[in-house]
Length: 405
Image (cartoon, rainbow, N blue to C red; front, side, top):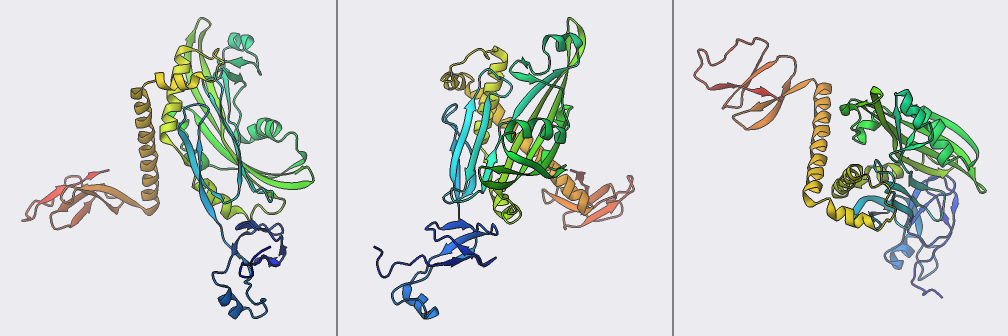
């Protein structure tokens, strides 16, 4: 029996749609009618609440629902393989985790398969990461005779590359949502910025990458659900020489697959929550460096025939500190490259150029289009289109030409 001064869970109403909420004890709920994110406002002092709400019985204080989120840091550790933290992200308090990282040593190109879900145990809302798919293709007819479509070559499935929406229709939906009833596609569209946001390396390696999202509706059990799927197709090309003559081998992935799910009609209402979750996702660069080291080891040693998962720890130790540090340095180098590209794009939009001021020893942004810029020790700048112009001529000030960055 509760004490007289304990806040009581009375009839709650959603502040957005006015619907009655289930009298739950959780501190964070989602309205089952409109999908609004709500937190329960528990009073600090019963006396204060009684003064505000005279109808409240003496000694009791009401609990109300208000719009908001209550989040905590979720950290996932790769316990099966490296033992390192793999990623962390913000997730609602009370949501449950399922799945994880599974190591497949017979697939050296993608030995870690990630399949996980963070979901609301009191509702249909869930964030899910789906397993990546990796494929290979060769334009040599003899090779295709030996390894037809659907077979495995060095652990990868043999299949010609597809555009991203085609991959969604032919691969993602049949393999991951094929068992769902009454499946229908509500919307699909390309996401040109998605490869850049996930820092795809395909374009800078001579290949290409393409992102998309798809909204679907289906029935699971007695519930009708809406889900928005995101993913990227990455294609890498490499010329090779063989006994059959020169050819091209293609390695391609359907990866960065993740989705948001709610009850039908509630996806847009939960957009803010899911946006917070995905934007807070942080992959551990030390895990990624170890992962790349293990891929290198598996490819070089061709140990895809090893089936004992316990050997992952031994492989991780054998790859050596130097290799892991090199992969970690590569991570930060790529990050710096993408950061620089983002900065360059921002400057292009704002119509400015960057120059290094030798007097202040820092980069300054000046109006674009002139090509030449000079700085003096008074903090003054001169911009000109004339390459032969030199402000030091007939001047008692010290000007230095600035290097464009």
